Image: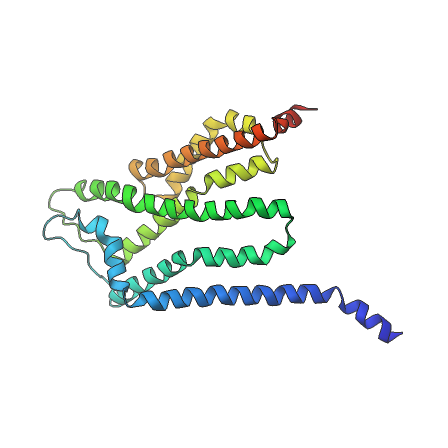
Length: 258
């Protein structure tokens, strides 16, 4: 009897073990790609840092420069930035590995929807980082470098600057995912276009609260994050209306039904 019981007891464990092995394999692939990209970029780490620091360097007063207040900063600051850039560049491959892991468990119609959403989320994240670099940074640094008291020379520490810009890159990258989140809430039936539209005032206040928490304590940077978040929320509602129109308005009808 023991011979007939052992296989039946091991059967439920086999699929889980296979999933864990596959998960480990895909995580290793993602890590290897990040390491390879980092190794390829490391030789240009100083140039990468100079590129990221350019919005501030162009606005520094004559005779001002960035400084390193710690012994290891000239090495560690470019090193950390290059590692971040490697992860940033490898995001499509990392997300593809996540997609390939969960795709077998999805239905055909879910796969058709998930792929465009995955591609859109990547593009929006990159768009948020680009918006921060090309729009937000020049405005912020123009304000910060001219708002100081007379006789104070601006000499920013390279580690402090790196922490500041990475925080903004992440904040704007995540904030630009709002249309995807809004669209998914409507699509899954968690809420409706009508409900979200009626709460627009609360959403606007919430955007400014998030902007206050994720950005430096000044009105300019908070507004530069909060206003795009609100506009992106409106974009998500717009796409939600399109879904509602394609479904014949059944979402709101079901929500209104007792």
